[in-house]
Image (tube, rainbow, N blue to C red):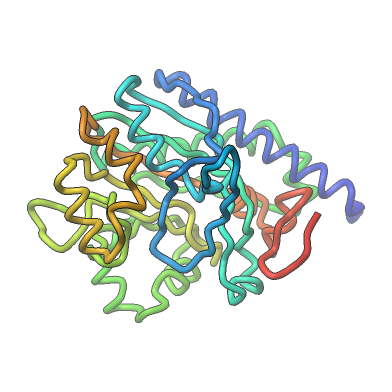
Length: 301
């Protein structure tokens, strides 16, 4: 019998709750410490695609609503070694994102960062987490998977890796869409050109002009899962990269002042909880992965 809409929504939320539980449990097993999210800050992630940052004025100062916690993750590692946050993000996306079925302008993200880690270590961690989540959902949420009509397959580790340039040559400018649609398992995009990412992403010393970054693409056409990589940590390198991006050093003054002293090398990533829920549940639109979805261009509760 086909489930009622309320039953399907309950099933989706139960699966999303299990995703969060597994992520937090597995990271704590690995000695990660959970931090509270930062909602307001004088500085936030500039991102590498058009958004309209949201600001508020209070106590005579202007604060950004955080688009991601990248700077705070780096700064936190001056004190801690491994951290994670279930962080709410607000990104006012262009209107052309309203019909993708994969974009929200308010969403939750698991953000994590590890002092002294490499890109490859973060890729392995992500693969282990994703497989563990799928195995747990198949075991703990059998009834809910039936309600949403989803048969999950467990991907094989390690996931396939394709360089950005090879992907572009093989599939064209829309390679992310094509790869996601054509591959039955997740795929890594690596060695991303310098100008395609933000100033805080670390340039590969052995491969100048390319970054020690990675994106993960879900299979079955569900698109980008996460972005991450190694970070620039030298004060002078960070300033140089800001200039290269054509951005103002003054816009990141509070971050740079703290970055002068003992900003450690690190790597990490952020993975959207609603998109992960959409993939796990096989949902046609990401709005089903939230009780109060914020769809670009629509007035939402």
